[in-house]
Image (cartoon, one colour):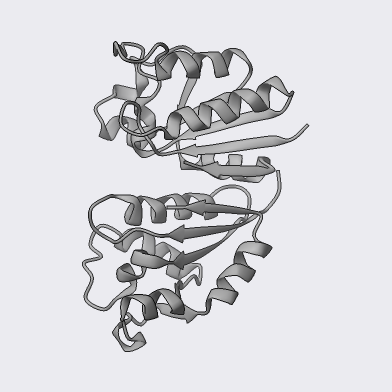
Length: 117
Length: 116
């Protein structure tokens, strides 16, 4: 079993970085690998629980919830969260940790591969 | 847990997005953890413009000072400079010019690469 990490800087609804990360992450989890995601910059918008958009069948936050359910560890950069008025992630879905760059440093130490998107 | 060698590549110009400064913040974060990770900061393509003399570094000074304290320099790819018509004399004093083959070697020897 390998450990794969993602540094996700892309937010939802404008670019597909989140979808690529979540697709690869879910595939890795389904094959029994360990997955960690660090949400950085606009990546911290992905777990907001009030997302709605008629053109998307599944919201980014729902994909993220699936990853969490399957065992992914998801950490959001706290400085990025508060910079965007997200107030320590109080409107986040369950299971998202609001942390900081020391968590990213720890993730760097733990993973076998890191994908930056 | 293990100490890792991490290459950060900066590919975007120092304007138009926050990657040039937030990438440096992330690099500082990586070297500041419990593990003693090592980083390389490599400027490629339009990213080399950050290493020029006279660039406003007010929003990156804190990170650059920390990285300098650890002995890190800004590594700038020679071929990117040539491609943009920028002479090496235009670079700031904390920049170090390296060749594309040296960039490839650094990436090859790194545990992880992060594009910013």
